[in-house]
Image (cartoon, rainbow, N blue to C red; front, top):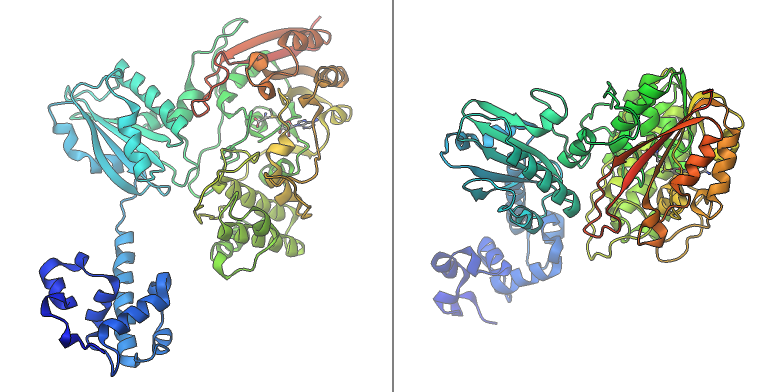
Length: 603
Ligand SMILES: C[S@@+](CC[C@H](N)C(=O)[O-])C[C@H]1O[C@@H](n2cnc3c(N)ncnc32)[C@H](O)[C@@H]1O
């Protein structure tokens, strides 16, 4: 057996370290230096190779006991190694707490302070991770800022390289005036759209000058100062804000004055009702819808009978004393019971339960229904184990919770699950990935205050025969895409009857298949309109009947809707251009949204 002293001096780990630095050494060489000497019959290099091989990737988690099981490692050597590992871990932990978290425009300013003195125009990009921690700061362009010269690639290429979750742009105005120029506004629009397509949202565009600063995010949120960004993906992006604020809609009726409307404020670490991805949700159109509603309809009660996310009903609850919410999906129903119901619940109790859930380590859990079916596909294995475990636990503890608490936990789980899904936003397919991040973290939902509410899970056509309200808002599916199939995982998680699943997408047997997605849509709509007992009927629809993709084509034409509604009263039609982005695959460019308002009592 060669002893260390038999190895020529230059090849020995210590000498190599001194001459060429630590990068020139293998892991076992480094460990050999730490151990210093071997044992009888096993030189120090053999001993370290044996340890590195035995513990492999688990090296950083080895304990003194584990080490002592290796022949030749006594307590002293085991302690030496374990202490070195702990020391390194401690420094890494300290480094993590030194992370720069960007919470608001003031944090942006303190990072880019020197820019305001520059004589040339600069565009600087801050790349952030999902917790708004700064990953990288880079100058993207120097010289006059021009939309035609600036290519989104320059901004987004580094973002994809370092896996940034979002970006913030900072620009200086050497003129001393920080208000945005027309060029700035065009650039913001272009970059915000590119960010939306790339899936790397642009959180803010801040202009700084000697005289102060201007934050698009703050201005679009109608706040003057200090309005915090929200970390963890529930951030309102510039794209969203521009879409909501865009005042350029056309209406075919008289001009509508914009009116006050309320969107719940985003609170850090709580899910708001609109913080989920849902096809056809009206969040971005809500200001437009209520501008028209406030002008055209009078009344005290409002029913949202195809409520989807419930965002329309949430805003309606600020305008009307009584609201009704309905959707035939189980998951949507659970969400309404959580966000809107009036029943008692304890915030402290919910927070404590969620805190305990967040301490669960997926590695310690056995497989369960959710992880067996969806782990490694829609979610990482560990995240899926935790989700399944929590869902089971909510069910087991149902009798210790009020009904509201049960649904609040369920909705918090649904929102937290949806947020990390390895999909484009629905569950018709998942991305084929080698590695899916273990990033499940449960956050509570933040309920909506309402005066009076009734919640149903009914077929809309049956429900309208039982209710009477001043305004009925009708937002059915427009094409053949069935919501119950697109959101099947949320349905399966809510119902928790653990059905047998089929196909690559792992769907259960069909349930709640909507006639509005079939050729019978027109007849069902005519029946519905005929059966409604209300003063006003308000219908949302769009014009995708010309779409190239069959599944996107409308089931009812605008003409048919108008004719059916006109039988109940005078009907006005309002239209709005709607920008629609889908990863460069836009199959329909001339997308318009329509709102039909029928005054049933009109003579
Ligand atoms: C276009 S989405 C509504 C979007 C909603 N306005 C929002 O802002 O989120 C249509 C909704 O109708 C529901 N739905 C479809 N057919 C239904 C039916 N026959 N009865 C009740 N709900 C139905 C779907 O589950 C889906 O949530």
